[in-house]
Length: 362
Image (spheres, rainbow, N blue to C red):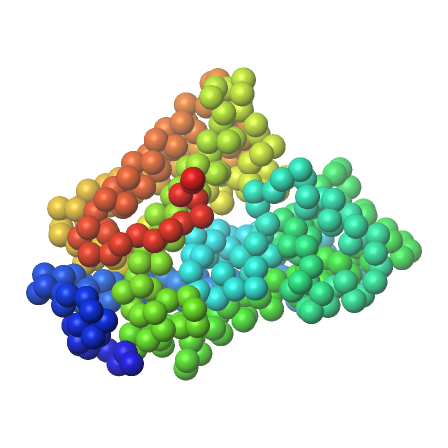
């Protein structure tokens, strides 16, 4: 039974493994300190903001439902933007309760294959059955029609999204009901995830006590490994998923409409927020590594943030424009440089083994 880091040598000995060396014990102590700081300084605040913004988004939709004909469409878009900003920060964490019950994909299903979000959302819009919007149904139904990507279609797709929501008759009323149902679902997921992290027997408490949490991690060291793997995976996602497919081999091969959130014009903003969130998540780990490595990492982050600030808002279109593509390429190179340094320095300095990540490839 684990009761604290001080029992690790005994645990390992009882399991037939050699006791860690003094150097390994010192690194384990640093890793334990770093992961708890990461949870307190980044993870929980990110999820708290996500819960707050999705709650505000649900309220905005509820107000629109109550007065659809003269509802404030701009307020729906503003609430969506705030929720997306919060998700862009929380999005880089896949460890813990967000990984249960398909919550991660249900929150924002992307990248998507064969325009599945539009197809499943269209089916939902044709349903008119309130049961299809119940929490029980959404928890087990197609993930594509119940998250931020589906709301983006309702708020930005086509040339008259506001008119469709305000259209008289059952079709318009049901469209608004669907939007509100999706907003309710998002708020519930965010609230549940935050509660799982902060409960007396939640993730944070188990990391602090060096105890297992469900089947996710066995102890503090494994939790550190998972969160650091998430951090490295965030850079793989930024570089390999959000940039490379959009950029293609050259401007002629670029695919602007494969970019994340291109309809709402959020592609560059989401990527920039991902990068800023990754820097915030890395800081508690970097605080425990040698100053030379920390200084190098800080410089690489500064370069990457500067490069991202120069990327046009319409990142996908810029990648297809030979005159502007160089700014997107500069950001790609800078992000890759941070990824390489993080994957090298943080695990080595803290004695943490990176785990499997869904973006590792075959």
